[in-house]
Image (cartoon, rainbow, N blue to C red; front, side):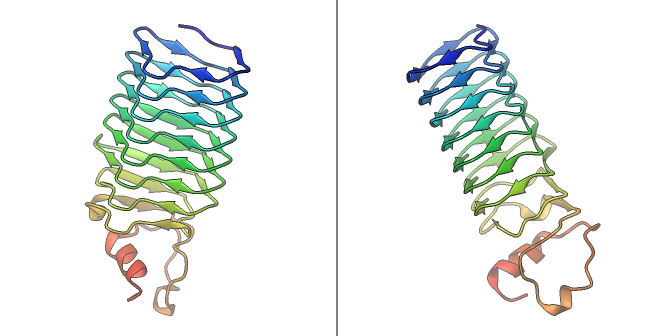
Length: 213
């Protein structure tokens, strides 16, 4: 189904919809609430330069094909709570102007968050990343960002400022990679010699958050 360039002036209710073919929403504009809760996408879904003015709900949706929100703008809260991404999830350059929730989301395929901007709170608690390599690179976290109880064994955090990020009780954090990290919030003086071009270890994050470092 091709909704490219479509303008939705009233509430767009796609809840429990079944998209059996490819779904294109490129450059679509949702002026009111967009509800994709419990929708199922059998194949590729693209959201290139899509604008969500008044909130977007993808709660409990299932993406069996690739999803590509590229340069997408979420002006109000966006919820991907309990979504199941069974294929590639490529969030390239989206901007979240309000809160973004990925609470309890499953990323089963390759996951790439690149050049995304989170202006407010980002909630990734209880998320899991099952692919051999998932990437968070060149992102901007301007609000509180949480990875509490998330399974991060396959995640690469690259060229990021993690000063507002929390990893409390994250699972298998020792298997995550941290490369080129710009900030970890406040460290004690014995860490001042560290450069930004090193791999950070999980125990250092735990030490920071427990207040013992």
